[in-house]
Image 1 (cartoon, rainbow, N blue to C red):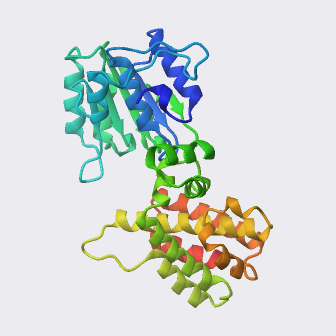
Image 2 (image 1 turned 30 degrees about the vertical axis):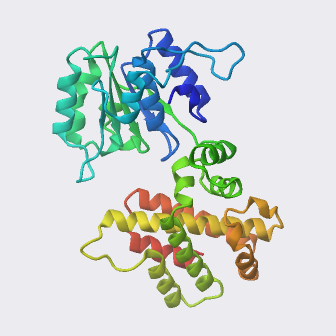
Image 3 (image 1 turned 90 degrees about the vertical axis):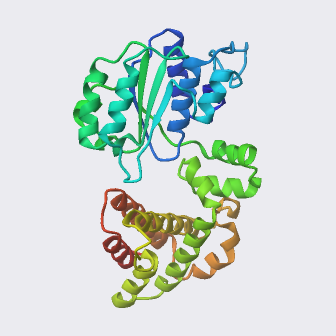
Length: 345
């Protein structure tokens, strides 16, 4: 998929395309922004553009104003499948981190000229998972990168990169994808019903990945748990009982088969589902257009909750959910977060 076929991020795509056309692309970049907005996809599209065997010329008056990867030549197809010898993708391993051995192997390979392409592209996905030793091993290469190699660090948490790494890499900041473009992606590429696609896009906060998750079984289960908590807290002033509802939100106690990371992700998923319900309550309480509801199938239940959740309470609850999610992404204790939130809503 070429840069021109990607939805959203038009200024960044144009900037990269111009840099490639002028042979002025920096040898190392940090692509940063929220989860699920297409940073990795842009990195792969850039790798295609750098190595495409038959760049397409821009059409006069067309939507793409720059030469782009064709998407069908051998190089483009291999990059899309993740098997191009000169496009190296490094991701966290089973430990959840990127270790120094993976970095050393990529640095050693980048020291040689590309085997078959014009440029070797090394993509560190979730670059914030690079352990400090691995980041230090990368420093000299980022300072004096090989002439035929490009290093792309993809992350939603750039603050976890060492300052010495960030100082060597210009940052491209991605925003969220517009709601209508997310809905179009869901309909045209994932064959989601248009009504459901619009609802999912409206609750995705600019993230295509989150919109896709909204239609998954995991999200449906998370929404059911969130709805139970919302009903429990509706008219429950007793703090002890509210904390019991917090336990429902946090889920069952972990077993040996589960992990702390999995428990954290489950709670984040439930909180995001809870956030969509509280947002919808604001719409219903304000007499807004119900076609905008992210949970249109629960409209009747939301109406029943109105006596307990007016616009102000729903707004405060939504803000508290956002604070809780931010705390979890910064490694706060899931139990503490769930208990605090149960007392806030």
